[in-house]
Length: 333
Image (cartoon, rainbow, N blue to C red; front, side, top):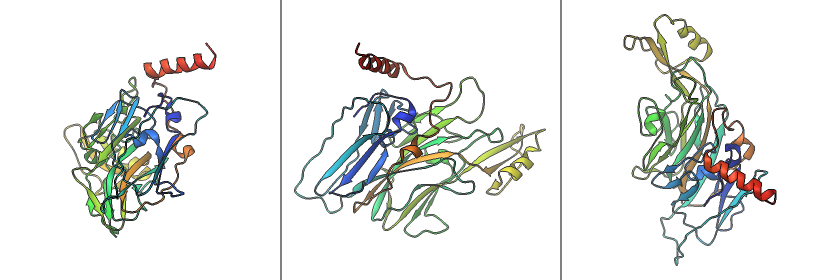
């Protein structure tokens, strides 16, 4: 499918929902672009093993979506702008659904900002048996000169009754996205970062906007009854020689996380550690469940606030051309 590229808050206000087998509530309810693998309303050229946004404007997805009797797919424009829509849905009809076939569910969550010392919940609430296919996560980093890195938090998967300790616990956000020592723009079939947006005229260690996708295709995450997926809200702090008072600022304002200060690191770093922080996180989570279930309805106000273009971001050439064509049509020229 395609719709014309628009400002981020407009792209994020277009809702995709899927209803299975006559259900009154959807099992998929997400911003349309997140469904195709790109967060924060920014249609970036993108290619994965399951989705693609070709040239930043052709939205493609190859998720198997079995259903029993019928399926209804709805696209809702919650903006005040009219635009053309082109789409194609391909399907096969079989005599019966295979016994192990499951329904695709997609949920959307956002915390703006996250709660300090509380992990952001990517997914919870769906009943198994099922399979966690993956997620598309958007992050608006709330800048602070104290931190050098926002993504030290572990991705945790609490499976089938896990309480304090999860069955799967990662080693940091960038590791879950498949990279290391920080995180920049890159793409592979199963994991990557569609964009990493920073002000080109301002030098600072963290970007303003970023996001990642992670598909668990060759490494399936299965659950029998319940699944909860979270990510910690902690970042890294480095203390240079002559700047030792930063330690007290971190302890008083943010609070240390993990084992605390780690000591000198190289000739330029007097100390370093990880500390609590709070950013703006959103996530579309993709889950197969044996039975169709209702998911929370997408909230346009929640999804679109605070994601408008930053002063240094400019609309692409194609978006400008499409906007000019739309203006000419509306004026009857």
